[in-house]
Image (cartoon, rainbow, N blue to C red; front, side, top):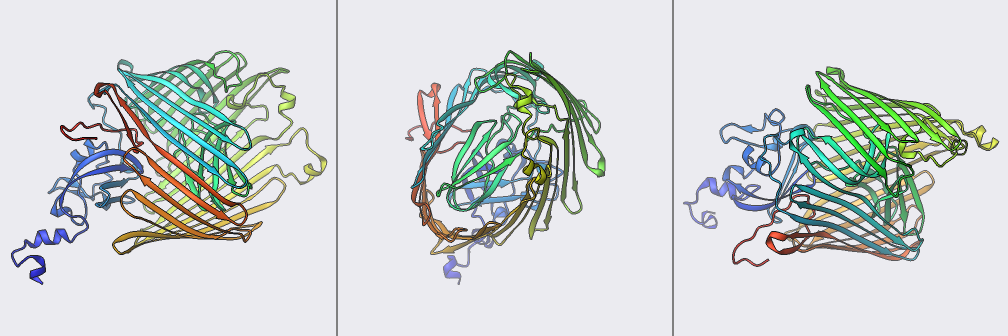
Length: 634
């Protein structure tokens, strides 16, 4: 076979490298870390990297990836002075030569903060707007949603804004500016000064939207992501629109296909329940409530943080008069102490808490709050206590968590307070008494991972309730969720089950299973997926589909199945990843909802005054690079 190899004089090491996972050479790759785009980087692949990539610390630092030397100790090659990241647990490195992309998946434990001695650079003045627009139409409804995220560098100031808008046949058209702020770093205080439309309050006491100013300690002096991004997951019986709202404010809206879904990129700026509504093409709706609150983490020994804020209520707030807030935290050895105050003419509150490291027992946090609220018919006060515990078992990598909270009947946090209301009328419905949640996650080698969680919420008796309902009402709601997932040789399997019981003793449950199988055909990569779902009051739904791509820009998918009521459905979708925008569309057909379609477009617009140019791109990452190459158009 030497004539195929080009003769007997071929270097065996080079021939082996060419037949490895990665061909040696220099690549300009699109780097992403944990699903977040990090811009383009030059990657040199040597013959020694043909099986596993070995990345130097200098390359990782330049790319903005700061890894923990202890976590990647086993993967460090002292001879070549680089890290084989995949030798550490729960780390994935996906280098796709065909698309020139390098995706790194690294657990939080394997990452460290950006070093504080990074040179200060305020950057060049520039304006960037990320946009996302989608619309759908069908037999029963037509709706549309759009969002825009602005970031601008103006001298030493950074302007950030987030806005959403929606419309539909059923009315309820809305347009909301969720945030509009201008911030700058105060190096002398290691703090950030922020001015604009934001929120004022405390994570324990609640908050309200304001037009104001705040000064916050920034221990790393690195602008972070605003808001908290939890995971909202559920099961769609067919093509559906998922809408998230909090305290009556629209957060996000998106079309999803049939089967399990997970939304992980919606930032929250205030504490409070988030309501997820899933609207199918046939008009049926499913609603799920996520009780969410931000819990502060530990501070390193000797580290402290502070926040001073003041503002006037914005148009979405029910408060009257100015709102003032102050908080302070200090870290000791295995102990973090925090306290906070919030003041308004009608609402006052104080909070205190601590996070204690218990060594092999894990860590526990204890928080307490007291609040006094002045309604039209008088003042009422109450308190709230919150406990949380977490532990990661190193030997088995088992994650454990447990939380509990209790509030007195007359406690009211700032997020839900309205001074114009009458307390006796507000208190006619049920009020939360206590709630707890527990969870366990367990990976089993590289075979599969298992997670199980449960929750219970208890209520005080409602002051106005029918006698019939009062006899059946236990005052408690509870639920449990379990999930099993595995991936073997690229084949992914996911099983999930959820069950709940309401206060009247009615049970509900749902279950789903999905399988995805990647394969190659005629030198093209494809993926087939199949999912099955069922529930207590529904039959069994089934869907299957196939996806692939014609090239590195155009991809497509098609499939069909039957819903839980026995109706049939089918779909066809396609997407195009252009230089200036990302476009996608879908066509759906079902026996219950008829024919429907949806389209979406996303991308970014970047203006650089120094270059006297405006650029359009499909890239929507927070960090972009603008390169001007002589005699090169574009």
